[in-house]
Image (cartoon, rainbow, N blue to C red; front, side, top):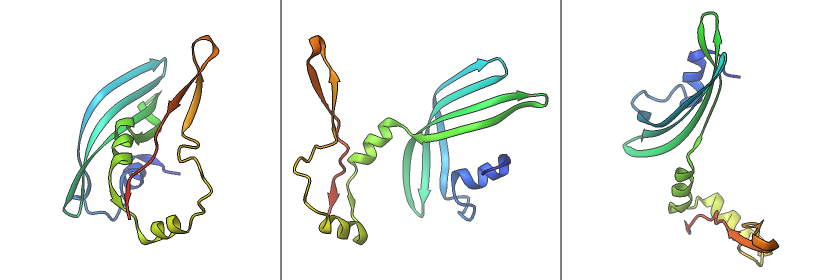
Length: 145
């Protein structure tokens, strides 16, 4: 359980021992929405995050949902969720990467029992006049062995 602002900043973003010029080094807020329900506010936004790992620079798109409650002393954050933006998930899934030795070993020793490579990726949804339309969703990632 993370408690307080310092606990959040130390644990929820990057490891506490990470140098301050590493990890998230900048951000830009994009889409932003706030909805009030009496003494509760739900805030959602998209952020483009600049990251630095060693000398390698990267960007990442994240979605945030924060919930605030109005206390006698002011507004306090009571819940938060951070996740990859759907566009970011698409980029991650399309990015080439080398498999590590452990991953390569698992892949090479996996049983070849799946005769349908798209099994589990076809979702049926009812179409017009009761016909089914196939809605293929690819979740594959290209890997270099």
